[in-house]
Length: 140
Image (cartoon, rainbow, N blue to C red; front, side):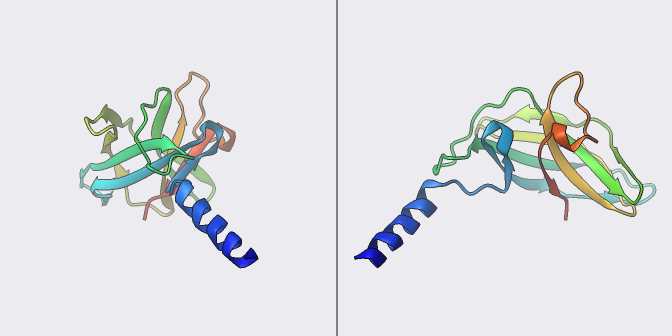
């Protein structure tokens, strides 16, 4: 009986929790993303822009229903030995399916790795400060 209860509890736990690709813990929100174009790591002379579809949903919502997000920005960010920096601003557009399209992402091939960082849209936001970052993923 104890094994059945444990198994049932394990199954229910798996069913009730959403599957987060990126967790924005501070705001109890998950992010699912898929590249709709790219990601392109441009060499000298190339100007290919990447596009990313992003869906936000509540961490405890197993149905993963999209939610409207205000005040969160997306920052492409390069991490290199001894330095880090961003790239040009991206465009974010709300889609009819509840997701957002992040476009005009320009990434240049460099010695290091690119990340997509999610941060609060505020005047004092610093994408270099990990305390200001809500969540991130490495571009592969």
